[in-house]
Image (cartoon, rainbow, N blue to C red; front, side):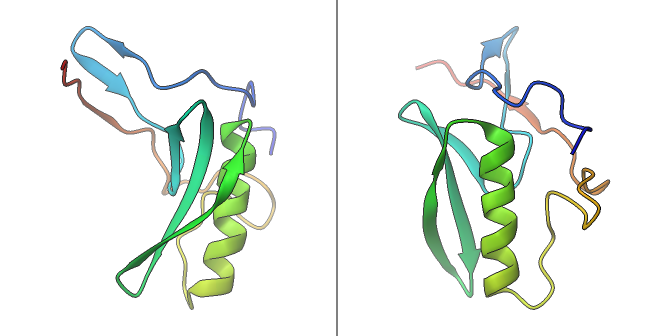
Length: 95
C-alpha cells in the first residue's frame, strides 16, 4: 500500500471553483471523519468510519467483497492501488 502517500488526508477542499473529492470509492468526508458506505442491490449501507481515508477505503473493500460477487475495489490483492481508481474532481458549489 505504498502507493498512497500521507494516509491522513485533509478534508475535501474547495479552491478555484473545484473541489477535490475523496480519492476512493465508498468513502466520504462527513462530520470530521471518513465514512464508509457501500451500495448493494439498490440499497446504501453505512459500514463505519475511520480517521484516515486509506483505512476507510480498505474497510470499503472488505465490505464490498462480502456483499458483491465481482466488486470493483480500491486496492488490488497485492495492496497496490487499483489502476481503475482515479481521483475525481467536480465543480464546487458555493452555498
